[in-house]
Image (tube, rainbow, N blue to C red; front, side, top):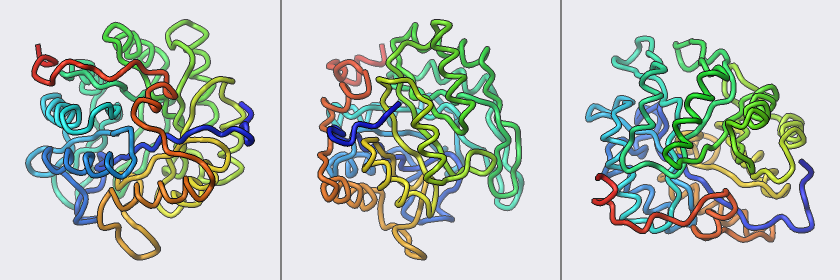
Length: 306
């Protein structure tokens, strides 16, 4: 896909407030409980974010696959952030039961069960390839076969849920195209280039450009870059006409050695950079159009439980 530098369009800002890996040991401001996650999304919504990327924790702060907790957060966002796009991460994360011990990844059954979240999110992420995942002292094969992904996409299609396509390498983009050619994924597609995860594609400008060149024309796209790479690659992405994701899932620091005081602080900086580069931040309604989604559900959250 060739970027149109003369008409880059408006910017969709996603915020990933919590993540499924590190917790408050990395930054005390990271929200873990539903009411705190909802408040963070509300603050980020007011700052300019239009997509709420969700992971949730149990009462101990441990990453959980409990669909009722996801439902609570989605209801809160629907109630307090009109039109905001709700997006749940399919990988869920790693369950660290005890500090210092090796974490446990979530099963394929737990990940498939995300289809049963009520109210349903606007989007469920799809991880487009199997790769070696490493975090702290935990290593495992993050399994995402085409067969499993096709089954998951079929479940999403049945429920009217769109997919955000997370690609961690160039081959993952081809996997997405293969699923589209089979009729499983419906174009236009929305890609997230994830750069800087251990075991995946390194966070370099050349790799970002290669991934952009590989996606089909007419796709929408954003960059998810990790840690110290987030700010430079996000700025490069904005200059190329792409969209960005910020938040403590990806980076707990505001600058070198300085922890972010809130997720909203990271969104506010993103908005400033967008404007300095001569672009505009998309409204929730505009973001839904840009990401190939329908209008926000008009039913009240209580009705969504039925």
